[in-house]
Image (tube, rainbow over all chains, first blue to last red):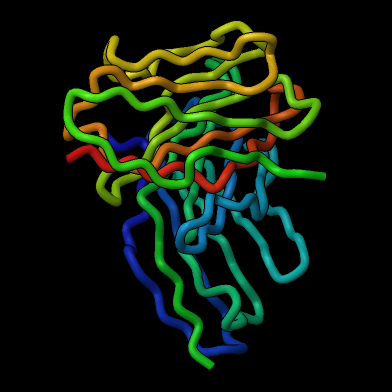
Length: 113
Length: 115
């Protein structure tokens, strides 16, 4: 029973355009969400996070949107750069039930020059 | 500041053997976590230490897995005896205060192959 799902295994975008990565969750108790980026043979690198009391958080080219009623979050990368090509993982936690992160399966983003 | 480090980066063992993985968290981080990713699936939680105490070990698959964090610094994860299904990448992460909105920082992982 996967509580966090990333339904698109891959996404291809042209350099300079917007990349939109999506994530859905089922557990309404999740109150903190994170996006990690992962390059081959490396560990996940923290990118951006959002608390459930917010609906948007922005950091440079990266913006995360949270729609609690739809149990959906998305990561926008604008403009996309070839160096953004990596696997992106969505993760969630219920801070009242410990600190464990529940991850989605990942989306491979390819930004073409 | 050094990040989370893990050793070895890769381990190949035969079924029935024992393997010990090591994780050194970011200095000053009391919280240490183990996760693993099996066969390209999602990354799954194994356990959480606060200093030397096990806070949550609900993700440990069975009693062949033993995690320790003596002295509250580095941690080891021992698999004994290893089975084929234990193959995967084992990630360690650490965080500073472990409270609400705490960010976990991951190491590069140890790729374990059980033949």
